[in-house]
Length: 114
Length: 111
Image 1 (cartoon, rainbow over the protein chains, first blue to last red):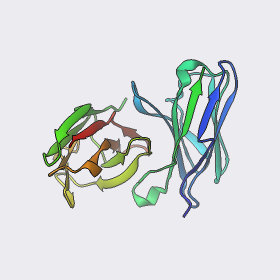
Image 2: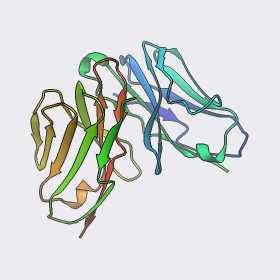
Image 3: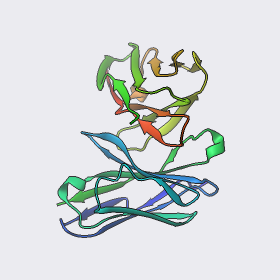
Image 4: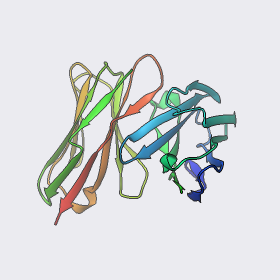
């Protein structure tokens, strides 16, 4: 099993630019989560999907953030326009509900906005 | 909304000493999970507790779930350098599939 695959692994971008993070969940998993990790706030749940449908996006910080899941094997998290305070590690994770919700994390996308 | 608090935030121990991290939820949980994140890595699932008062062991790690299903602990006996990392608890309520993580306890081992 390839695990959850995220890209890019590292991105440095200038303030105001659009950033798109990509995720391929584990095949067969029906839930997908986007988390953001910073030293100050720890692991924050941004949004999660069940069967490709967004269920809870209350963690999305503001309108600059958007997430989509067009099919069961792909999701994107977009930040437009990006700001320096968006610098963080963004983790995508997936799970299969019937397994008790064990979450499998990708290796993360390390974003730096300068 | 649901909150999961974890203490301490940081812990430095001498190699061979024991270590404990505590997790408290503002609401009753259906289950609690524990994850470990090595420096520079991603969180990796360790264990899940479901039953009230449940205790599970993994070698030197002991996990407990409180009777009220609102708190949990992870205890490591005789720490080793390989235990270095951040330990997260994550709680799930009955009503939905959202899993909320605590802020984690960062364990540093002094040789």
